[in-house]
Length: 80
Image 1: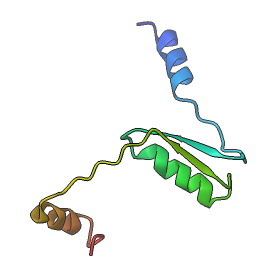
Image 2 (image 1 turned 45 degrees about the horizontal axis):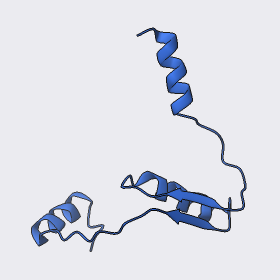
Image 3 (image 1 turned 30 degrees about the vertical axis):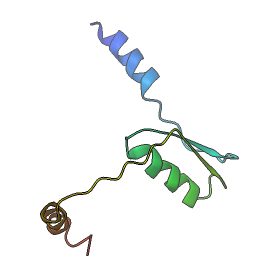
């Protein structure tokens, strides 16, 4: 593929604008953890007084205790 085409597609898909104040932060549902983290950051920094989550389905996952302890060790005790 032509480099210009790839660059144009990349620029279209990966928009990077500075955040601006808004009335609400819309949070589309999904399994990617980044949008909720970014929405929380924007809210905490005062960019919007409200969050509007949409289309999220909560599914409980139970991990074996050994796996949790392994993750805790790897993260330096973050889950103590």
